[in-house]
Image (tube, rainbow, N blue to C red; front, side):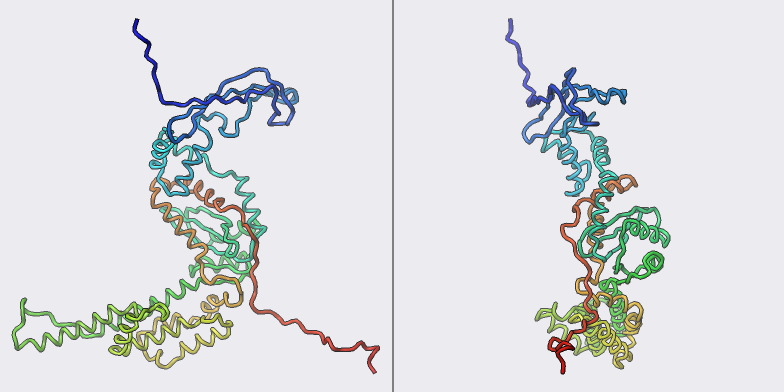
Length: 460
């Protein structure tokens, strides 16, 4: 008789005992007696081989719930696996973390579970796990309650677009926590007003709102928080003015003489060499102005020695660019030393009324943008506070992270998937670790009492 063959599957089977004589009822807490037993199987993660869990659980019948419920029975609850599932909870967590934290596509995350943890699941199962793992409404509500309690008074808002959707994001500029997201199928003033009203219902009453120069914000701000100050992002404002300076330099470059086209290919004859040298010199001046345009806009502290030499030679050859450079340096110094708002306004007025700058037609666009007093007053709001950031980078960084994440997830662009992702992003940093408040730089001085004054009864 041939020897029997034993099949080795390379699977580890772990036996867990959760069968107790009695167990507290998960509904009412009454100690329920055991009346039967059962066996449950689950699949766990492992680095070396597949693992199957064989779990012995007890079946219980609660005497207190028997009078009020048709189903008073229950099994031993297992914290590491959800009811009706065959995979442990941490397997779902590994998949969600690979997608949300590591930026992996769902197909790659599923393949990673099989390769690294010996857990083979279908791609459709990965989609189900991703959507089923969204934070609950209660978790989101509790988080927003904690954020509203520690709100600093600074609200930074921006929108980002993804396909046919717009996503509004509001963050606290001092505690560095996201207050709320909102997914919209369209973007207009009414949607923005509704978003602000939702934040107000949470208890958010900002002293300062920081945004970019989008026309969506002013009317919505006036309708919901009329007393709130509006800080325009200084980065976007500076970018708009430097763009106008770049347009002026381009216009100046177009006024420089162009080289005449050579009639015949090859080396020119001797009689045409002077003409060609003149054309080469004209081309050189245009190329010099084109290649040095970014040096004109570079801040003084960011230039190295070679760049300073190039810039000096460029300005000596092009007096118009020298005037533009003077304007740029003076413009960059508007907020140097964090002056008072009145001092910043005085500096701005000195720039826009400078005769040399007004006479330079290539600075007309930049002077017009800088001459907007209302916009400049909104840009200067940060000068009245000690800990207010002058830019909307707090929320822009969050939006850039969303764009980077979506680059790897071409199929996660339906409404349900985006909402699940936004809920996870809302809770990813946890509640604020510390509280902080917006602080003003200037205030009324307290009247000092005379310490050397004598009481009235001792006078005379």
